[in-house]
Amino acid sequence: MNTEVLAQKLVDWLRERVYEAGAKGAVFGMSGGIDSAVVAVLCKRAFGENVLGLHLPCYSSQKDEIDAERVAKLYDIPYKKIVLDTVYDAFMKILEPTENKNAKINIKPRLRMITLYYYAASYNYLVVGTGNKSELTVGYFTKYGDGGVDLLPLGNLVKTKVRELAKYLEIPQDIIEKPPTAGLWEGQTDEGEMGISYKELDNYILTGIASPEVKEKIDLMNKKSEHKRMLPLIPDF
Image (cartoon, rainbow, N blue to C red; front, side, top):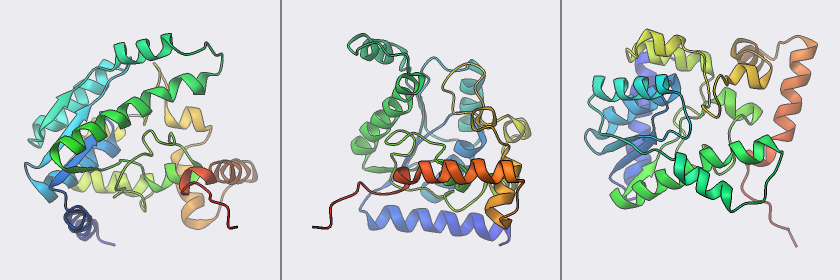
């Protein structure tokens, strides 16, 4: 599909879904990365001033904050920064200590989810997520964290297509080229954590072609994360 046509169809889809829910606009996280920048601009096109971009650092990179604020200013997107460091620290103090890294770092996106829904309820907005098809396929998101949203406009687009859309929307080139990261710890990147590149992942999703090692890794991640893409199971008896 032509990128210009795709952008307009996504804008129309956002309007339709939000208004049919009786909401007025959209709230979304602005991480400083390409996915959130694309979602922010699409929502701005769809709802004008009835949007809110939230930058929610939790021991996060200052570069990400600079990039998030830059996109907000460039596209005149209403924007707030809410620092979650002290909330995270207070929460960790009342929990039993654990050596499990995922148990600790997944608190960060879940705190962000709570904050997004607070503002969504306050403004009568829906929460628009930034996950793409590549991430969804392998479960590269936190259940009830960045996966806890109302709408996923990029959910059918692999990362390569999101980059094309970002170029059409004139997202700054350095943000398009910045290594994708969930911002969970210093130096963390998506590809480093997954152990495969987005190029390999996208190619497998689109064509079914990959090296045996990459295919095995993607298939395993997809299977293990199946529960993340489903509503909670209910007994059928």
